[in-house]
Length: 237
Image (tube, rainbow, N blue to C red; front, side):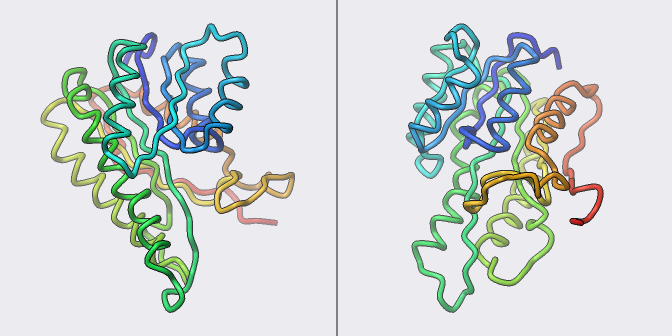
């Protein structure tokens, strides 16, 4: 895929993996639309990546749990950049609670963000992806293949996301749309209220995932890595 002047929509991109993907793609000449629920974090990202206001970045406050928010996001993105060629469904939450004390609200927050939010993002952008023979990427997790204690909602959402993405890949490749799910292990981000520091040097860094997305987009169109497991090269010291 020729990347210059393409447009990417990244959900949950105000910090961490999403922000690193945004920066990596902007450095390749790609227009970037970033969504998030925290207006202040979006403003901070815009100041960081677009300090002079002359770079191709549009930050939109939106909630992936609401289809109408994602539909409006696509509309605003097209008004700014003309079309949407690439979608990175990155928005996600992690709530780790034993099932016996998990609340209904915690369950729905996890499933509605991590799984239904991806469905909403794809439905809102489907027409553009078909028209442009675009690329749809989801950010799953190794928790989508490995289950662990206190993670019933998170595991369910990520197992579901891996299955959803692989089925969508089969649905959409007849239209020339490429679909990939990336399943990272430990990444040095703010996920689950973690504060990254020097002790996280052994982990995958957000910019590594950004580079991976760039590499996927540059890959010859005849080849599709449809599911990618990625983990730190070495265990924690």
